[in-house]
Image 1: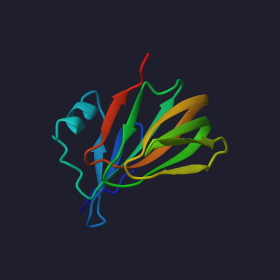
Image 2: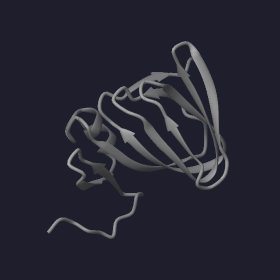
Image 3: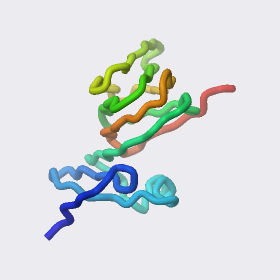
Image 4: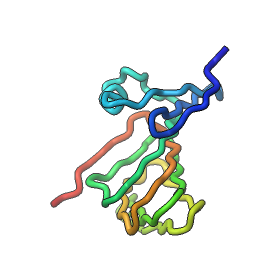
Length: 134
């Protein structure tokens, strides 16, 4: 029988597979390295469900070329800055339950207006990052 939980997002994320099954993924010091080096697979047609606390602005932009990302605000206040095809816009999340849909291939970063807790549903395959110029 597959694992049923209980789990908590502070130490276990989820992989939503293309066949609609869910796999708990243990989050430890090596998680992001394992993810970026392919040790957790390539996430082809799969989503990573994760939970993050932010006290300050993001230090980089990111982009997901394989699908839309969904970000749900659980507490705090955040402004997402979106950039695609030479244009940009801001999306304000300031009420618990607000969410944004970050379209495929849209560069985005976040400014934290109040310490925030957010839930992410991310198409992980080929995610790209770029530093914010100092």
